[in-house]
Length: 219
Image (cartoon, rainbow, N blue to C red; front, side, top):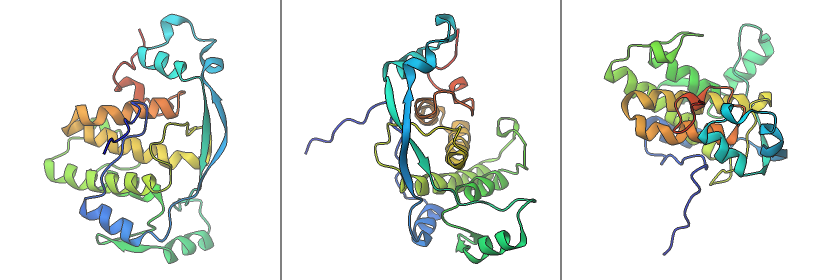
């Protein structure tokens, strides 16, 4: 059987094999909702950029022209400003996943668990962390689980745009960046397609993926 070639700008697919991932998917009652929300015109976006300020990767993004944009349902992770009712609702939806109580559909919960396993607090730069192999293994398991939950919610291969400017999309960006960043510590070549895809599906690149993605550095 001939398997169709996946475009290089598609979001990479992670096989759901890890222990945490399988536990998360078993606890997942339904994927996050996702729906087309508009269009991104690459030519219009880049027309004001001097040629010297556009990287090879961005030139490839520009060639794709106009693509659909998507918006995702967001499951909020309660912060210091959350009301007692909001916190109680989150806690009521929590499930035991690999010994941690989290909401299976909350992408930010996986980000928090991944960075906690890596010994990183809020606002700390993952690039500056000194991780041992055991901590990195655990951090990657949690980040991988979050990416696999995200995969259930978007069409595959996902070759459209997921704008960071849409607030509800930001947890998806955070979990993908967390996974790619942690993976790059051990397998830079395997992490590269994730960084590259982040620029393709969000050309403004609010997460700074272009600094690591192949061809992404501007001259």
